Image (cartoon, rainbow, N blue to C red; front, side, top):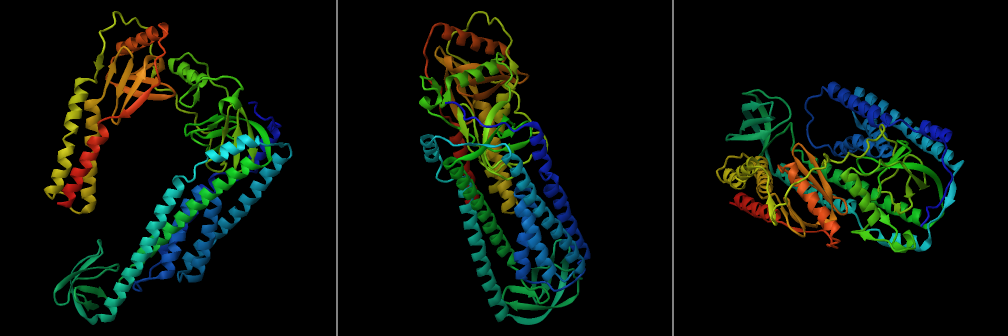
Length: 567
């Protein structure tokens, strides 16, 4: 298929497009620092003592306040809106004048930035409109692309989980608030004496007459007499009513985050449907991938997160002729990767792509190349700097080496002895973690989780070191890693690279694996066996993989750790 043509966005217009954008550091740095400064002013000038207790207004407003810096980085417009909303709430309800002034100034800055963002995006769209042509995907192709879109994504799953957590948090708040109200209505007011006070930890021991530990926020002195409410084992200072609104804030925060994720997911879906269904304004630009897999337009003009696995045209749509494919890759593309791996390829030049859609900061566009349609995962963003190019291939190509006489096959290559010994020692974590828990060494659930997690990491790493190996056979190579066993025919092996820690292998289509502690001469043997297989015309087969023993060991450790916690 021929990529649809479109007018190129020329240099002067590109310069105007860039100059119209709001610098990335305005919302992400300046407004963030303003948020920090306003919070510091509020803390420094709030000298009030007493008045502790539940505050529903603050419980709701703090969600907006904490969301502001996150949104300024993630969704600048929404972050500015959150800053304005919190400023209004603070001015209305905060009784600390300096805090109201500080947050009011920050809110005005957010409001000005919102107006700047909206105006800048309109100017960018106007620059593109001066030259843009119109393209439309073939209806049959667009239909197949729409059918291939997933019904739901990870954002939806995360949003559902967060919504459940939010509902649970709010329900638990209602439950705890009812408990507190019941205790307060049944409690008897009396005088208590502070017998010990740890003001740094916020804990005092009150004698009523039996000693009871009570959490506090204010500072108290030993021997101080304080009024308390007593309902059986429930004891609270009158000056500091029990506050459970933290659960309300956590629940609301989870619901807000769930709503934002669903909103972003719905925007992506509607944008994709719009991009696949109608005529679109389009221009031509060059594009490169960066180290995060995003498309970088015109050397840093903008970045666009795209579908991780590009939706490629079917064979007839690609060329109209018979084309070999390898695991979803055109054979030519797989061979290009193999040449790069062996050091035989040429440096890639930036590709010319058709950018169709709303080409502006925050807009949604799709990219059309000669062989693929790249759908957006997120809106276009102005980068903080020139995005880094993808990492170079690991190691260096293996130099031409005569391996001498080939060894008898099959042959098993293992890491150095010291690596295997270290792996065996690390496996002691399988028993050490649960044993420490059973012995009662961890104090509290958090330390228990850390101990068991460290034991699991040692087990996983140790098993990998102990069982890692490569097996050479007449038909190919078997690579045993921590979780899988890869079976690769010699014809599918791209080549071997080396570094100071061992060898790097790559096979169809672009799978790579490190083989630590294996000498370079064995890489030369692998290449020699590959060359012999290719020369013999052996068709071989496809590379495959199966689960190894690692997941079973991890599962066994999880069961043992669970049993240790249960006991």
